[in-house]
Amino acid sequence: MDNLYKIYYEVYGVYMKKRICIFLAFAVLLSGCSSISKIRASHHIKAAEKYLLEEDYEQAIIALNKAIELEPKNVDNYLLLAEAYQRDGQLNKSKSVLKKIKRFDDLTDEEIAKYNTLNMKFVYKDILTNFYNTGKIGGSIDFDGTISEDYENTYLFKIVDVTGDGIEEIIIYRKSNEEPVDAQGKKGDLFIYKVIEDKAVEIDNIFISKDKREIFFTDSSHVNISGDLSSIQGYYFYYTYNDDISEYQYNEEDPSLSELQQKKVVFDSDSIDKVLNIENIDTEIENMEIVDPDDMYVSDDTKDIDINNVKKLYKDVLYREYNFDGYDYEAKSYVVGSAYQFALKDVTGDGVDDLILRIDNAHNYQDSFAIYSVVNGKTYSILDKGAPCSDIIIFEDNSTLITNGGHNYIDYITSVPYSYDYYLYNSSISRFILEKEDYNNINDEYLNNIIKKSPKLTGDDVNIEITPENIENMLK
Image (cartoon, rainbow, N blue to C red; front, side):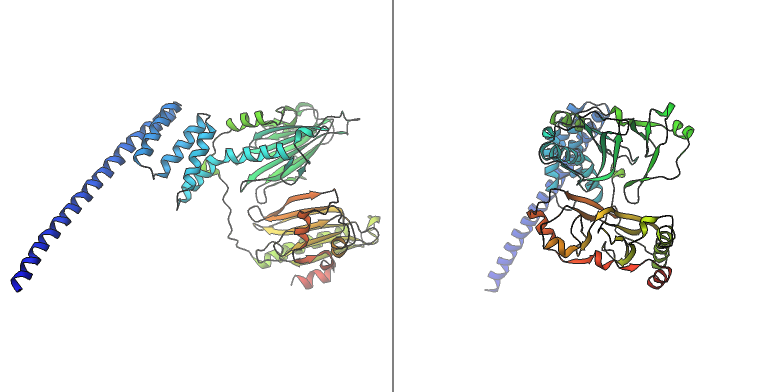
């Protein structure tokens, strides 16, 4: 019996050795095939890169498809193919390739950045097409229907980088179809949108009168003037782009006329002549430049906040309000009957109190509200809504409803609703952006869902009078 076991183990051992040898040989064969595939794929990639430099996109696409056949899991090959299709004007095929990339798991940060740059054209196209069909964009234009049905206005557009960050903005020129009655009459409105996290975010809107035009410069500034730069007539308003909160702001230190004339012009509002329709959208999107991944905006959620500095900055704001708009400022007669009040509350969700200001006009309930926050060591107004307002309601999710009727929040939700503005806080740009405005007084499902939320602050909570004593006590 022992001999039988011995013979069995010897035979079994020989059998297992043969299987291991076969397995190892098969593994070596597969490894060799894989190496050969990589070498051949690399050859096709080098050829494709050469063709792309020569702008021979047809041959580049052929080479890249061959490389993908050999290496079907190499994300870089798909990214290069999507780019080649875009450069060749085949946007639908590029979009199809990008959809395949989305199925891959564990994309690297570099691959995600490259994907986002290639996907931008489709994001812009979706935004503009949706605007054409619905009349809605960025919360600030809200025409009920396709814009072709807006017989009072003609919508022109332009896609151009006006902020100097290498990423193009969407410019919408809503031009009135009625001739202005005088030089100050309305010629149109210019809206500037930056695409952030696949959404159109308004960074400026400009009223343009009959005798005015807006000129944009390469240093990310723009100016509102009469005439042209060689012969500016009268006063002008100068705005600079603030990258901290992604918004144009009025610059009180206007450059001199000679300084303006030395600036390099990108374009002016009178040159915008492309009518916004589906055909022109397709053409403009096809002509968009592919963005360098290094230029893509990356949100920095880490904040190094000095609380003492925040308090000092808020004091500066409050003392400025007190000294300029306080009760003792006799030159402002309309101040009588108004209360200047403030509150400190974290309304942005970053764990640091924000400063909420309120001018409470007791005569006609026409209040105004402003929210200040410290961003990168500076104080900014991150929401500013002038009169007439009746109340501000900031909800637990940091969204904000500003009502334009009734006396307060309770009046608003227990009666026929008045018009309103609804804002969402965007942490990527550290400010509130307008999500929806409604002046039709319609209590629709959208509004009902808003007022069901729990408020964490209303206008009644903004009740600390702006006095030196209160400023010092609240900001010790």
